[in-house]
Image (cartoon, rainbow, N blue to C red; front, side):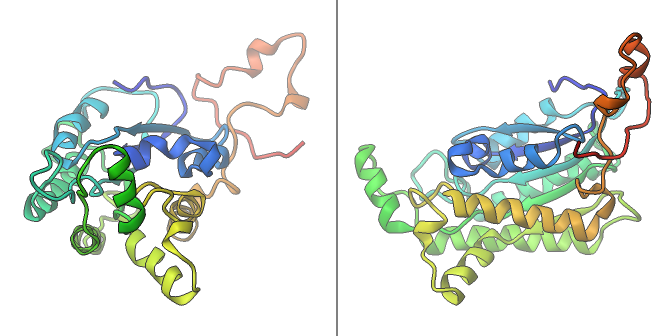
Length: 274
């Protein structure tokens, strides 16, 4: 279970592309989020390497608070980033049939936004992230080095990305009022391929082994998430959000206990750079 503190959070849920997203050597997109939201939101990484939407169905309920359980903080945002492993070719144990993958994505969203779900959380805004392209050449070499047969196909993974995009757009069209039950989607595949085809860049820039994100790929995810936050949820733009805790210059040196009750529902203070 997540340890809930007074800080609201941003939950990142997915496979290795999420798990590895704290790697600063590749400018991990989660690390960039954590940097952007210092003292504003806790970035909680719940990425599980090798997992698919099949395992996610059983795992996510264990990571979410029950709707009936009072907490001091809320999961304000959540990413669901799955499909790279689901799209593995059979007979891989990771393979999930396309129709089942679609149903699983819907079930994961409904765990959060369906009023009948034990983990119903209408204030949690979901960002569905589509799987990236597969660069077959480098990944085939990676498979050879691991003693594996080639287990991914560009066209097959594209179909999973398209399904993910379709599900995200469908849910976004029936978004609730205000910030309730909001779903957005990042078209990772389309964005990266547009950069490759329109800007004469290569997939090697975005995918370090053909599947996992390189620095430029992590930049894409981070930038697209921030684009959604800044345009649709401007109050959650970190540049406009207040920070938790008083400015250090305003602390009462002799009686800090009165200033540092950040767990006592005291409002956060405006941001400062000094």
